[in-house]
Amino acid sequence: MSPAIMVGSNEKGESDAPGSQYQKGVKQLVENGLHTIPKKYILPLSDRPVANPEDSNVAKENLQLPIIDFSELLGPRRPQVLQSMANACERYGFFQVVNHGISDDVISSMRDLSGRFFDLPFEERAKYMTTDMRAPVRYGTSFSQTKDSVFCWRDFLKLLCYPLPDFLPHWPASPLDFRKVVATYTEETKNLFLMLMEAIQESLGIIIEEEESEGKDNILKELEDGSQMMVFNFYPPCPEPELTLGMPPHSDYGFLTLLLQDHVEGLQIQFQGQWFTVQPINNAFVVNVGDHLEIYSNGKYKSVLHRVVVNAMKKRTSVASLHSLPFNCTIRPSPKLIDEANPKRYADTNFDTFLTYVSTREPKRKEFLDSRKLTSTLLQEAH
Ligand code: OGA
Ligand code: NI
Image 1 (tube, rainbow, N blue to C red):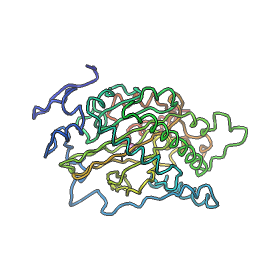
Image 2: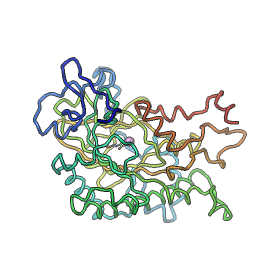
Image 3: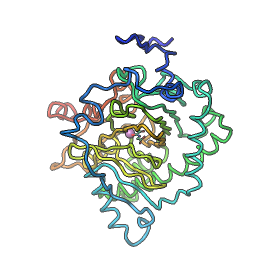
Image 4: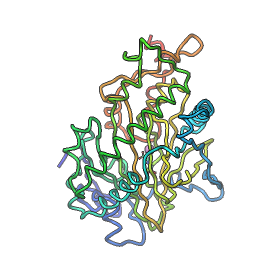
């Protein structure tokens, strides 16, 4: 047993020891049949999706996120599209992308595969359970199953993806087409990510001179060899969805996340103190600014809190592709966005700092990003 796992039981005598029903995940739990949720999943009142129906922090209407027509980025309307992207990243930290050029075929194969993976017998999925945050493949449940005091209603599979030849041999070989389907999807989302980043850099007004284009000031060059992580999320139907969450409020660590959600609503983003549901659009990507892009943009673009609510009727699946620089690179505000009027607002950081941070704390809310913000004392230290 890993010493990192805390063994305990709550006052109902429900054990959360490794191997207990909770460590096996929510899919397993639901398959055993239940009409109420175990105490392990019940959030304190203030953290529930609808804290108080009278005075709700959940918006009544859905938020119409900006929709970026990717095909227009390549045509005469590019300047207007860049402007919409800039507005979206500043205001919501989120937008949806349609006409992105990734075929319906590639997308439906990936959805279908994700469904078939979670349909595998538990023993098959459990082969990839590990508490090692650096493992190339990690199957698990909740958000951080070794640290969450209350568990989330979610099972997941995480894969490291880049460089593909290093990681692909570690990926599940079952279902039989797993590696082939995910490899194609990985390459296509990586390309889309790079094209989106090129547009985002342009929208930030960062111009790369020709002599810099091969150098280390060119973030696009570095991102080509950047890290990529694929997260398959599975949220089974939940008998008491108002008491728990599929994912707690969090921000994503990388530059951009490209999320493929299915037709079942569940993703909510925080905007002006309220939670808004992101309307599913068939085969579109929900794209959001991660902590690293907030840092790179020196705070201009926002890494926004989001969470997942579950529902009693339908299971929900999603696939998130998270992209950043190579794990050993330093992430810092772009020197081109810093001058006397705009001082550097974030400390330099890297993936190791992040992993150390999340392994010592509950990776909740925006604590990590907050820890990178330069207060006046830190600003002095940084000089
Ligand atoms: C994530 C995430 C949202 C969803 O994987 O980081 O926020 O809808 N997923 O599953
Ligand atoms: Ni997220």
